[in-house]
Image 1 (spheres, rainbow, N blue to C red):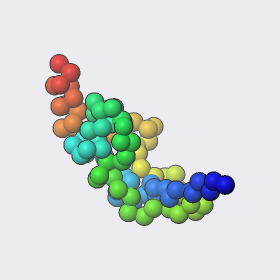
Image 2: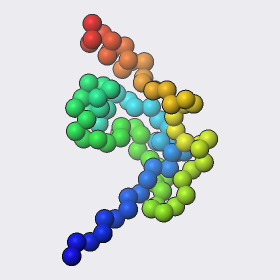
Image 3: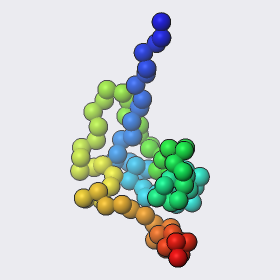
Image 4: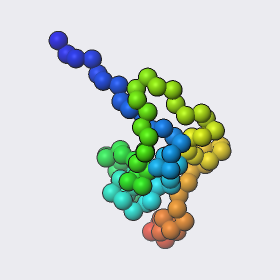
Length: 89
């Protein structure tokens, strides 16, 4: 008899780590498709490590405290964006 899958802890969405922007240079960022990678590792940027993970079943942070800009615009550091444009040209 197989054991039931365990619930995972979630990111809080409100701490400094959750609110950080992808660095674009760590191994996890370089693996992301938006930085030209294959998306095999599927991990968050090393700079975006959550400092207050939420236990399974706990309530998430209020919507106004979660990471990300209004409207869901993509945040990319200027140095990474300019490097991507230069590489595409």
